[in-house]
Each structure stands twice: as C-alpha cells, then as structure tokens.
Length: 120
Length: 112
Image (cartoon, rainbow over all chains, first blue to last red; front, side, top):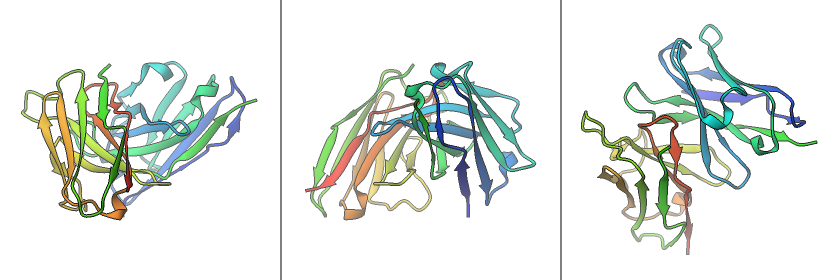
C-alpha cells in the first residue's frame, strides 16, 4: 500500500526557517517524481515544487523560488522541503504527493499533510 | 501562468441525481500526443485531495464509474451520473501540462 507521511510542520516566526519531511513507503521511491502542494486555511490548492526521480531536476512556483528548496533522498525514501524567510502567507497545510507517471504532471497519491503556521 | 476557472462555485445536489462541474483553462491543455492534460481531484471534508480523473477522461484506480471526465483544449467537464452522499466535498480541476501547475478555485458539492 502506498503511504506518504509528512512531518515537521509547526509554529514558526516570520523570517524563520523550517524543514518538512515526507516519508514514502509501498512503492519504489526512486522511480517517481515527487511534488509538494499547499493549502492555506479555507483556501484552494497551490502547487509548490516538483523533483525528478534522481533529484537532478527541480521546478518551483515563482512565489517560493529562492526561499524553498525541494530535495530527495532515495536511500531514505524521503522527500524534503526546506523553507526559509517564511512569511505569514506561507501558513498552510503542506502535502507531499507522488507524480502518477512520466506523461503529464498528475499526482496520484497524497499524504495527510502537515500544518505550518507562520506567526509572531 | 495558466489560469483555471471552475463553475459553479457551489453545487447543491440531490442523491441519485446527476451533477456536472465545468473547468476552463486560459491555454490549451491538448498536447501534440493527443492527450489533454487536465485532472480532477476531490477533497472530502477533513481529508487530503484524491485523484479522480487524469488526462481529461481516465478514471484513477478505484474511482467509481459514475464519475466521468470529458472535454478537450480549454473546456472540460466532470460529470457524476448519480450523486451519492459520499461524493460531497470540494472538487478541483488542475492543469497537468504547464509548469507551474495550477488548480481551479474549487467547486463545493453538498447535499440538498
């Protein structure tokens, strides 16, 4: 059974940093691109970043470029999101998700999410 | 960026009746290989989103056949042939062709 379990979300002050983790199981992790998506309270979904199977290629939405870094450790079956210079508008539930295949960017499995609150 | 526009915002439905949600993209999602890269996701209350339909019309694994997707280019539709109580939640379309990936604003489906 495919499982994605996020962790690392917490209350952080504006300007602070945080690293989110997503532990994957139930599939061959090294064969898949992985993605982070977030959802602000009461709002819709926002794609943040995706990383290639071997970690060699990464894409980001403009609003987080230069502040967030996605990484992947195939030995640990984990994907990470390093977030810095956090702002109040980064407050959201952060989901990791698995890309369905190599054609298109559909995501077929999502974690349960981890809440990041940016506030003083 | 590709702008995704869904309608309606809210959709009250009667169990057993059909329902339909529209999604329009600001750029074509039809790729040269003939695939339309448009997905539909359902986020049930208190849950993570789940994939319903990918590439416009392909049901994801385990999705009941009362869900169907259609459309091409910039206009797409999700249809539920007979709504069940468990179908309540927010439906999102997402374009899966252009980076950055973008979602529609969501359609909240609730039982009348």
